[in-house]
Length: 126
Image (tube, rainbow, N blue to C red; front, side, top):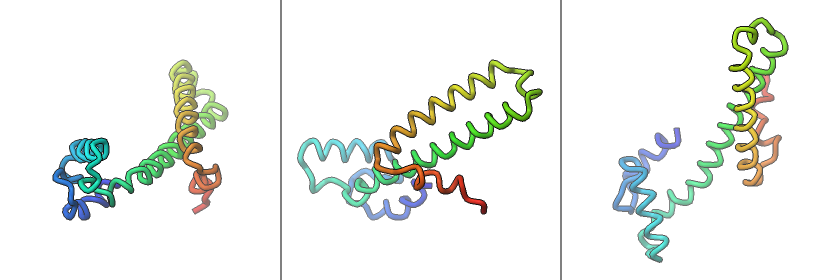
């Protein structure tokens, strides 16, 4: 999704390495230019978007993990016959998902977001 949005714009980049063709190379070029103080060589319009895109990605991952956790906990509670087959697997999945949620929440919270902004799409009835 993020890559698709930038593909069109990346054709006009000043960086010798294209974001659309070689993302890793593009990152290395910009990091090297910044560290060397060659600020004129930095692809600033797109570099500035990276933290924003990372935040969107982490919020999406958090929503996904929360939905997964809620689904597993509801099934655990209301369909006990499902967990009898592989109780250890269910328990491990719930524990792992809780760990992922905690880690993602710390990242999202550190970015200054509150739970209402982050979880509003989960609460939607549409």
